[in-house]
Image 1 (cartoon, rainbow, N blue to C red):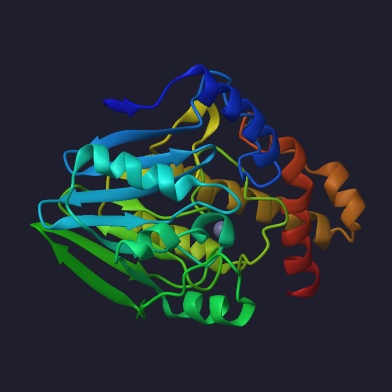
Image 2: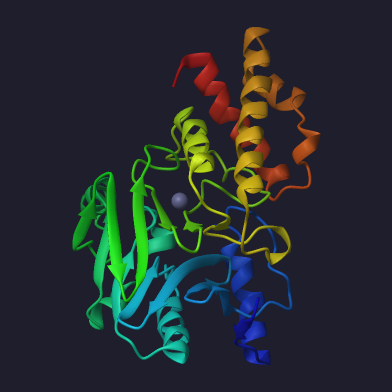
Length: 301
Ligand SMILES: [Zn+2]
């Protein structure tokens, strides 16, 4: 795996400063390795790259006819400018599309520099509705929407956009490159990490059904929205299977507590899942993940 990296003491210093702020938003709750530059581009396949900025990452696809970019990851920071500069180091072809993974602002804010270059913005239909409701100041409104499926063909590359139902939001796309056997989908298939905090906007148990569906799809490499522990940027099907196993183990453990008439504080005190104790977020997020499943089993919500 080659890296088109951006290094320099100033960037490293900025990364250390930025990571302290970013930890409040980063699902994995992993401190960024001190030696990691603020941003970098990683080649995944001949035409497929990851742009990472601090602890968020996004996929882009380069073809002779143009570039397909995804999440701008620029909430309250100038990541899109760096993203475009990184693309321009690889190709001068026009940036044709920006595709949103889902509606959460930490992934999709700050796309204006792409819009200024003429990119067409695409999102799942429910994502556009959510953006229209909340009107976040720095989120470019999607130009086009996807319902269940759309296939983009550009310069010899095929990219499928699949909506496989509710999981971490009601508008998550799974972007799949069938030839390269790569998928990009964000936040709900983390690498060796618990689900973020209290699983806000996550549908239970739909997220487990979604994991079964994504595991059944044809792919080898997963690009998630955040690196895992040790700055691991690319996952495999085993990561998705482990995420499903975690949720099933968590669900079963919480159900047992509810069946025994235990209170939420008792459930939080009782439940230990040592199989996952090395995962990102185990300490801070396990009690909140327990709470989400406690409400599901105890109240059906
Ligand atoms: Zn999200």
